[in-house]
Amino acid sequence: MESTRRYGPYTQIELLTIDTLQKAHSDGTTFESGNDNPVLLEYYPEVWRVILYYKADTSKSKLEEIYCYEDNAAITTDKTADGQPLHPDFDTPEEFYEYIWDPQTGISSGGAAADAAYTNPNAQPFNKDSFILIMAGPDCQYGTDDDITNYLR
Image (cartoon, rainbow, N blue to C red; front, side, top):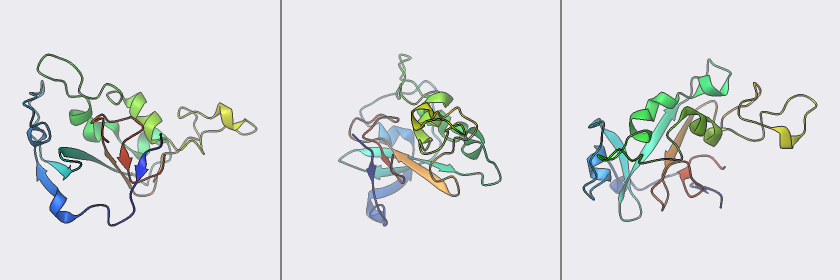
C-alpha cells in the first residue's frame, strides 16, 4: 500500500492544535522520556496524531545532511513506561533515511535501478528543497505504508 498524499489545503484548521504528546496518547500511555515539548497535532481519524515536521537544509547535498533525524527523535524514539518502543519501525536514523529517500535517486552511474540504495552518495530525499511532513496513519505507527505525508512514496 502506498502512503496517502494530500493536496493543499492539507487540513482544516479546526482539526489542528498545539499540545503535548500526552494529548496524542490519551489512552494513559506514559513515556520514559517525560517529553512535554509542544507538538503539532491533527485530529484524524478520531484520535490526536502528531505531525512530524522536518525542515530541509538546502545548503547540504547528502541525504543524511538535508534532513536531520534528531529533529523529532524525542518523539520517534520514545518508549512506554515499561520500555517498549512506541514506533519500532521508525526509531533509528537508518529507518528514517530509508523512509524519506526518493528511490528515483541513489543509483550509481551505469548501475541498474534495482541497485538503488538510500546509502548511495547520489541518494536524495523527497522534497529536498523545502520540508517534509509525516503523520502516522491508521496503525498509529511512523514508518509504515499507511503514513500520511506531503510527498508521494
